Image (cartoon, rainbow, N blue to C red):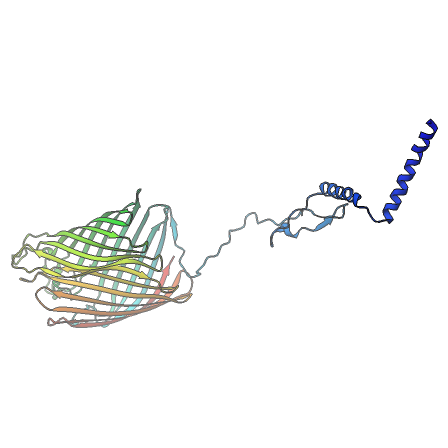
Length: 471
């Protein structure tokens, strides 16, 4: 029995080898398939997991493939990967190659600009009887805007000096400074404060100006305002207070005598209440009421008239906010000033106010502005006049380095004692930019005044050519 068992054990390996030899030449039976699958699963588990291919341009996407001992492709890491320069400068797309970059000063961006050129005008006094003159003009402008994350501030200073080279004598200074800060408060509450100052020679055609003066006296204008606004759902409310003061320098006559104009100095204080309703985020009609008082420094002028007056206005308009495409507001209503002196009639009429900016296509900006102001008078029995002003301008980038501008304006002066003046003007200009900091500018302007009052008709044509430098 023991000998038989040993014989069987000795024969088992030989049968296993025969079965292995037959398995290589005969079809695999169904019951053997699971054994083959398990082998393949074990081989897959033992093989390294292939790295996924990267996107185009990724260094990992260009690594060479190798084969392991199992015949499967694997990916190996590169030793010479591309790296950036140690001290290289950052590269960026500067967009418009002719746009000014500005100068950073703390949290503000400053944009200075200087113009220097020579011009000619056919009417140096912009009044009846004015004579031609060739002049040199220097203009300096500085704009500053904050880049704060929440509130916003902006300031601007603009000044020019004109001096005649030949012809009628010109020696004029014109300057202006403005500033505004907007506060974004909590709970849909906003506030602002603003102020400004301007000094400029008074036009000889302005009512009340002394025509016999050797030089046009300077007029100084100070203004300050502050306001607060609140949004409650679609309702919008605002309250604004403003002060504007005008003073006039003395006029020097040809004989050397001086005429004081202090009786023309005045201060206007107003308060404006506005209520509006937002039909959409881009459209909000509103109504506003304005009340105020104009105070003259002299209770009575040299003719004995008390010219201080009560000020009233009521307007209706609409606010537009379509982003850079169209934004601003425009309003119309009625304005009245009632002098304290019963011998003087009220100054009343249509009131226009607005400022709109429209960009119909990229590179083109259309601007529209309108205003109405009361002008005082020193003529006995004359209360003054209403001056309506409107301006329309178009600026177009004709090419990347060529900018064109065109504008038209209309002023209508309505005298309380009867009669009117109409002033029409048109202007066109081109600037060719040699680079983002320097350009050559040319301008041409024509202005005409027609009046129902005698001796007030005039026209003026002027041209200017010079360099524009900016940063």
